[in-house]
Image 1: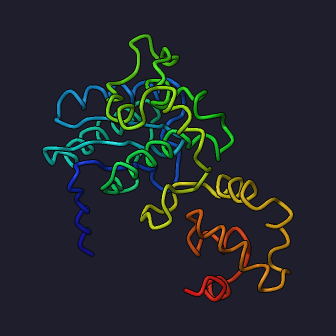
Image 2: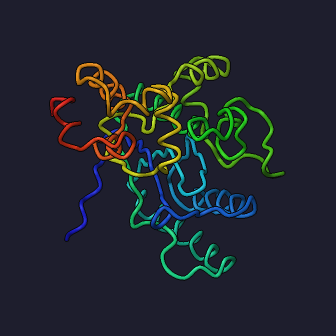
Image 3: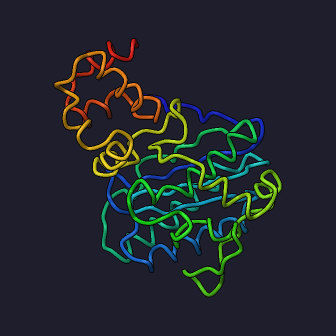
Length: 259
């Protein structure tokens, strides 16, 4: 099957995600995370691509990139190949490190840019790792001008002024960051699938609906169940993910969601 062409953004901004092959971990230690950030910084210096936000999770990476000269594919190819060589050398891993080509979603408005940035920084929260502002492996602290706690060299080359100018400064950034919800994906129509583990999805669903609701949803009357399924759908869960979370069949879910 031919590979689908990457959807281009007229603005040059993209939300980019690289996932571990088969959902496997791509970071097994803080040393490997530091190496990825070093390679990220080096690759930024070799291409006319700007970094506006990042977050390193266990089995995937989120980047918010600006690509004014259409170098994104070459940039990501070099970055992922460089890290894959390091990972294979240090772990003895044989085979693919990343799951196919990176995913990229175009960002076409200032509002979407800010919402994506907030979502990227918030990734540790639904996974119950820590608050966004306390996570050492994202660009959040670069925005608040807090010292890097991961490297003596400081933060990677993050362009913070564009977002801060839209929001009105550091205090407004912190307030905006706190105002978001813990969603599995930044937007319901987002084409990125499966970057959360089942445990992470379950945690988000419990926070959204409550453990009792999630446990009893199969035995609820249809009308009552529909409202809860609609909340999961609005939060960005696909029908397949809702089926895995609730144990309901896809047909029942489609009927409840009228789609």
